[in-house]
Length: 314
Image (cartoon, rainbow, N blue to C red; front, top):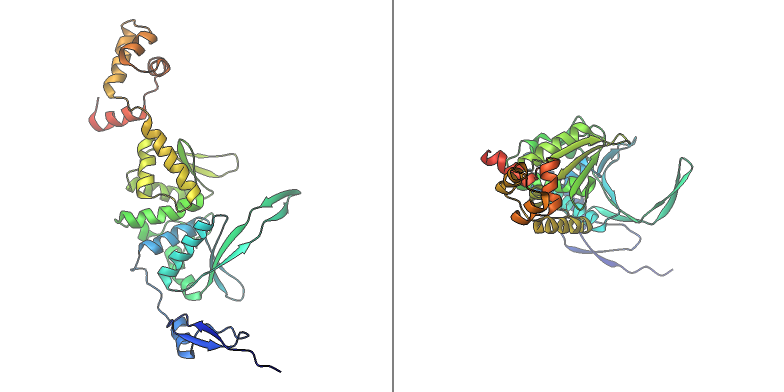
């Protein structure tokens, strides 16, 4: 029998090249490198950085921690967006200096409650490590990053670093947010967790929220207003390209809309009380007739004017 040829590989720990047989799944050049890699110290809770913050944000969203009966610990993410999967993998790798694996799950059809559902191609990022599992679990010891009981880690809530808060929110928004033309919608079945997210957003200067529960018993946090959308675009943003594109178009569209002054609103009210018609007020102030009618008849005060009144006073 012919002997198989040796192939060249690179050690995952010391990065040196070594030779082995194709049938042997060797990842390290020696036992010492293998032992040192397994005993490598995982960053402690004190070393909170932007990469770790992003990972924690994803775990509060679509990411997961799991441990089976054989005590096999798994950290992973399952998504339809390749750029999201690559970013999560990159941040895991930079934080813990280990190499997660990306698996491609082909499209399939599933039958749920008698109905057929088409599933798109998905990308699954996984890494098996008990040390990383235990290290991440310390950030949410009570909720364990489970869907209905997760909470934002205290290290993030108490942080004064806007970049760390922004990276955590980016990881969460990549998972749970849907940008629309006039707002951003964040959905979760965990009300307390969403309240924590609302607090973090307020620390970045985002103030306008609408909180409600839909017919599927899912809590939704709506963020609207030109200033708020611009702050999210500037300080948080999305890793997923399709979501970032929608947010960018929304911000650009909102910036083109005319900003009304406080004096415009009060002048329209005074002219109407003096007996002028909506068309006459529109011609004098050079404002759309429907806008004037909304101000005078229905009392629709623009958000920009509300903000001016809050800051400067009437």
